[in-house]
Length: 204
Image 1 (tube, helix red, strand yellow):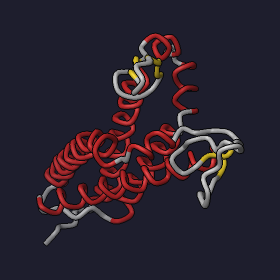
Image 2: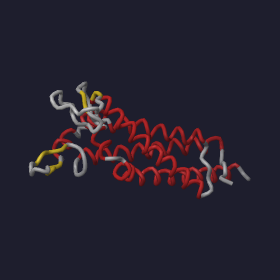
Image 3: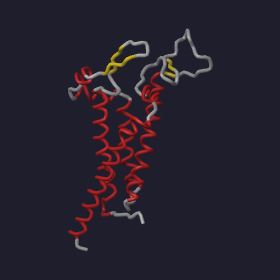
Image 4: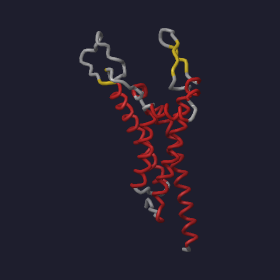
């Protein structure tokens, strides 16, 4: 095999792997966020503060405590919820990447997959806590977009409240766009590590 042929083969392999990972990471992101993530986790992952809350995110009222119910600070509950979501999100992404690539006859090197997984997981956790997304929105001139495109929620008693995040908001749109961009980065990192030095491991 000539060097040109080998180079072309590696390039083709890299493009195919990148496209496969990009599609897998990107298309499964909404499923992980909206189907697999629980409502309580979604509600609690952006909690901040030193006040006490229950595990469902409700503030612990000293005058109306729930007998036997444990409490923790809002920030601690927020971190717990974010970690729980990232764990399930990562598990689905890794399992899907392995299943798809192996079904197509390719075995991703462990170090490459772990690197891409780290890119996805760490940035997902940071973005979903909320502070980073707000900072990015402010630095890129999107704060007005966040404030303008909020959603109206109808409560059980008929009251209407506004919500800055969640379905129908600019927050969700910016969050989704950021995660997809990072997914592309994770796919690129995984691909580069998988095919560097001409490695082409087979699933057989």
